[in-house]
Length: 216
Image (cartoon, rainbow, N blue to C red; front, side, top):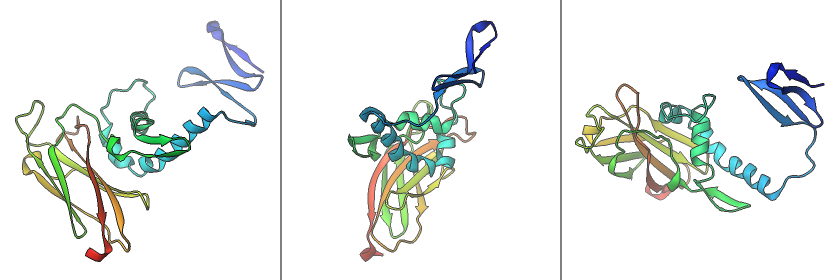
């Protein structure tokens, strides 16, 4: 049974196959009961979410910093919602149902600090060696900015990252990887965070590397 919510005229309760309720001060509605079928567009949206979610969920501690200070369109948003909004669908490529992540377009942090300039990464054994130009004269740059590094292994859906690495002025930092038994694809990213954690740079994709068992 539905009821009116005060003088606003908003219904709270069930009307047909819809139920309306108060959430964070707003009246929201959802369908109830079994959905017999979905449109192709609905299935595509569901699949896009299924493609990107396993990736983002393993990066909570990284993107929590990366999007901590990102302006929010809605006061109820959190860092994960922002990450999902920025990367879905723009970081997904292909035509439904053949969808996959476009790692070059992934954004893992967003802010006003200048991003790492001319970043590069090399694989030396089980160590990723990142380098960048300090670019300390760039507007908004600070000598105390710290580098953030991330390596993602899509075949196992695992990640290794560093959120408070070397200073901007150092121009280099290393990220130790776990031991691998087989050839392994590695997707890599770099960003900066302010020393006081009040801002970050927008992340930069530093490319894909492949760890080869024969070279171990």
